[in-house]
Amino acid sequence: MGKRLNSSRGKGVSYAKWGYIFILPFFITYIIFTLTPQIMTFYNSFFENYRSGLKQIGPNFVGLKNYVALFTPDKTGTVGMLKYFGNTLILWIMGAVPQIVVALLLAVFFTSYRLNIKGQQFFKTVIYMPNLIMAAAFSMLFFTLFSTVGPVNQLLIAHGVVQESINFLGIKISVRLLISLMNFLMWFGNTTILLMAGIQGIDQNMFEAAEIDGANSLQVFFRVTLPLLAPILVYTIITAMIGGLQMFDVPQVLTNGKGTPDRASMTMVMYLNNYLGTSKNYGMAGAISVILFIVSAGLSGFVYNSLSKQYRK
Image (cartoon, rainbow, N blue to C red; front, side):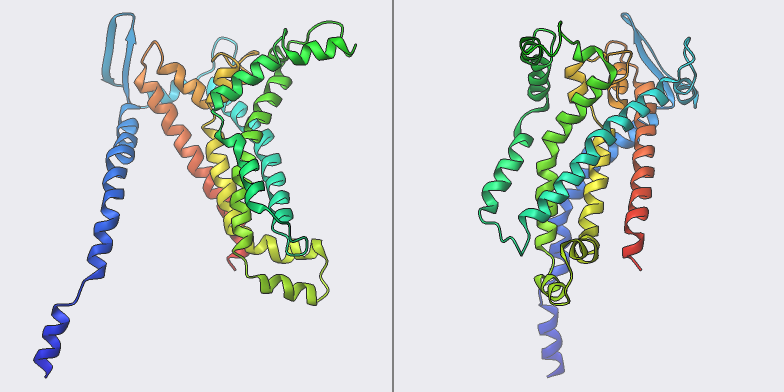
């Protein structure tokens, strides 16, 4: 009897083995298309490797020279790396903070058990639609609207608000506002849907219990919704931050890659792209990429620990 039982166990299906087989394609794809390029980028950052006219210089090992060059002030005393990181951070904050706040308010509004709003699928579709528009097309639309001969200036002149056209793309604050506005419009719908999904995943009995205890809407939001939504909210903020640090397409198209005025809208990835343009300076581009990776990882860890600490007790 014992032998028969053991033989039947030996012929059983090993589900763990099939689990590893199913996830194997992901790891193979990740190693080939993500991990290997990351390692090569880190490796190339220690080499001098660029094109000067028709002549290829390198690759020659230079150690930390590329990193030192990035933090060396130029003729005007400006450290380009710090300036462009500051630009990126300002543009992200101007676009991401309203995005998170508005998305959170909309998510609470549409999922309210008290309001019981109908047609949520329709509203989800409408809110998400701006995300389907290509960033380049969105940027060209705003470039046309706010150019010196665009409809916005024509309306302002026609209604006597201004006497002559305003160069919106030549003023630092207006360019930053336009870039932030475009990023807000493109991404707040995606953020709203994520937060709606998070709220809908909360047990409705929690809201009913709070209502029975006499809690008002604000108390329910801060004592029930926000704490239980914390994991999704932290994920949303971190992904929005990483996307903001990698901001490229909107300012690139809107300012024709120049970051005008006075490089005030030049982002880190635009700066990186300059080294991958005509000079093909892979060493400097690799150094910028490594710094951007370290900054993204550091800020992500800081945000995660700061926002989720009180909910992990």
